[in-house]
Image 1: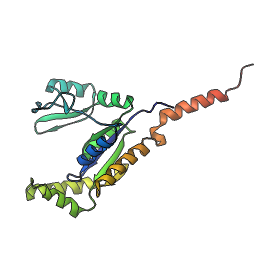
Image 2 (image 1 turned 45 degrees about the horizontal axis):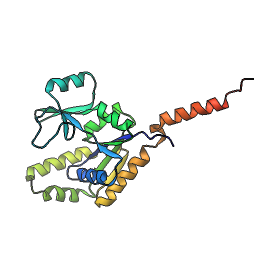
Image 3 (image 1 turned 45 degrees about the vertical axis):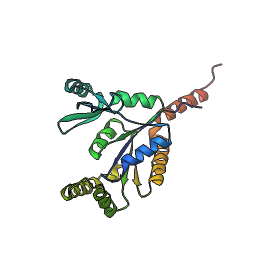
Image 4 (image 1 turned 90 degrees about the horizontal axis):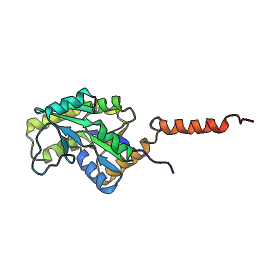
Length: 213
């Protein structure tokens, strides 16, 4: 039996679509998945541990990682820097883990450029009305914030066609199984199994080579 490499999956989705809830349920149900741990320059909050919630870096350390191309993607947010460490992701993939990176659409584009075999999944609600209901149901956002999020959703909807699979989160259990099935199927498409195919071809050439007398 051949040793299975892991895979990298980028999960994007509308705010309020429930992608975080799906990821938590997926990790609880299957042990072959792990969430990517990001780097950040912000200070740890009470209870956070380096290497668990984030890899905490100084700005100097973070900038050095950017210069050395040690981050698959990075961005600034509210005065701090955030990024996905290449070494962590590659190590987990080598260990056979299916790594999941929850990130917005612009970051997904960058990941796809650097890791062409990455699987891209997009999570949506069944309708715009359901999305608005979920956003308002949080009870933590003003009308202006809800409108801003819906406007952002419209912009993001134009990027869905670039993803490998659309997950409509109507029922949580079904959505979790759809994500699991999509990843386990898509990671074995021929374009993502190039190394296996090339090895197989080399073995077949050796078998078919003329025998020396």
